[in-house]
Image 1 (cartoon, rainbow, N blue to C red):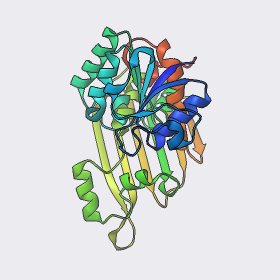
Image 2: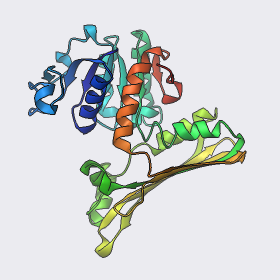
Image 3: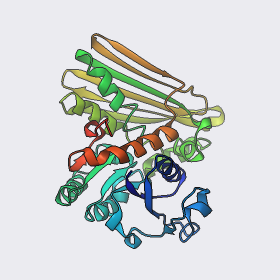
Image 4: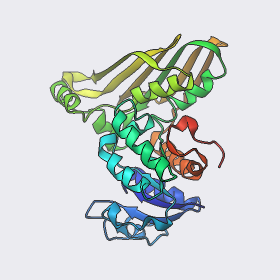
Length: 310
């Protein structure tokens, strides 16, 4: 049993809270800046068997009895790093669903170093988890590739039917926008999936290499009258002698599946028919990380270093 604080009570944060309670963990504090939630109890908001009252700020939390804080808020490291550092300075380990936290050195080396120093100085650990990045397009390919001698290529394809997902994901995929509005959203950084480059770096890390010749791209999938049906993205690069490519498609016409193919000795191919459903998988991964993070080394780590045993 772990004493937990939950930061962010949206769809994912609320589901993480519910599963943490189901797993027998003690939820000591819940934080959400939404004025409609702050001051109410978890029971009132979610109907769960818990009477912890939602606080509007991390600064209102008594972290003395908290062991792990779970952040289920923003994708960008710049939006969460200061709050995470505050928690780490309390000697509390952090599990975050922020996509950039999966491999933060790619997007922000200064904040990566800041978080690593804060964690090690206070005997804590910080790790980013999630379905993508953090599992299907990096952790699983890394495991598959470990069974192949001298892999020459790793190719991952993730296809997502956004009609079966939350409205937030459909919005990120640009569904229903015009081409011009989609292009503006890309330029503003509010459209598209965050994390493919992080996944690429995690795979390279598992191979003991660094990514070179990194290329990325984001493209709208257009329907009639140039209205957007979703998005296609890719990231590719070279990790030593291995070419790594990640392809992601999220549209209203996509089928749900994930494919991982490794060329080497032996060549291997793994397919998840029906795909790995992102919301429930992220919830499971976050709560499993709660149970494992305190057995990991101190500092900022990746999912590749997170123990599999509780």
